[in-house]
Length: 447
Image (cartoon, rainbow, N blue to C red):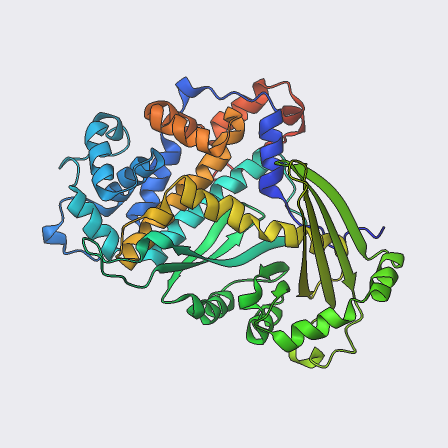
């Protein structure tokens, strides 16, 4: 079978595997506050639009203590203020809090005024730095294709005006998720779900997509979207559904039984079985590079392949069998890469949206101010990614890691403070596992 032409980078997956298998233990008694102080410094760099003479709490200080509260399961502005008052002695290890803790109204007002784009730049930059540190420390390669997923999420609890029964449009957020590093790079609230298309195109125009593959659902399978990705020297894989009826019918008509047999003979076919949750799943992928015959070939820049994906599921308890078939277009031509990307695209649902709803209750969030909601969501995403980095060392799930953070706030902050080059270096020197032997710590002095 043909080897992958590019290969998809799986930095975060490889990190989890090394951290889980390795017997790595941090010296938590000798950690510094450097990682938290670094975050405080970044927060301090955000433009503050408040009137200076009426400001009692520095913006960076307020954002840091709010984040620590969110990291420890605070979900509302009231809960954030209550947590900070209970843990004020601990919080003063990182910032003086000269004027004490802000009220919940102050937290709400600041989060409503703060430009989400500025907060996003800070949080994403901080996370990318942490991922880079982990990659360098554990000797993880950065070779292969970087994979970005474009998908939207609706907060179902946001469809009412606070304090009333009056219905208002629900908050819909467009996400660009970096599947390679496990980070949400872009979060943009859009007015309506249908506004997702032009917003996605505007976001992609501003991104460096050189050598990056972008996957998207059927809504975003648009000629203009594909053109933007191609012009930015990126690659793409998009789903086809009923919103492109003629195109979908044209692709469906190609994959006859005879065509499938030819594809299998040409080794552009991949299949494998999985068993989980009382179900046996058989996943099959057929890829054809024969696209010149298509009537719409000139409308889709750099279109090089069509993919048919079939998923058969058998419930081992009830005996029920389901069969689902999906179709995709792509500028990639390797069936292994395309299968990886199709599977990995759902990571934005499983590794981001699901956790935001189940572990951070975003679906039930009652914040109706668009800016405040987006800023709280950015803090949630920052906390979630840090939990993903810590969970493998604790050898528990992300949900259990979040509970540990809530039960032992001081201890968990020490774990986060262990994400410092000197602490990691000592831990890797002490470990005798394969992970330690593999590691080649080459972190720049000024990192």
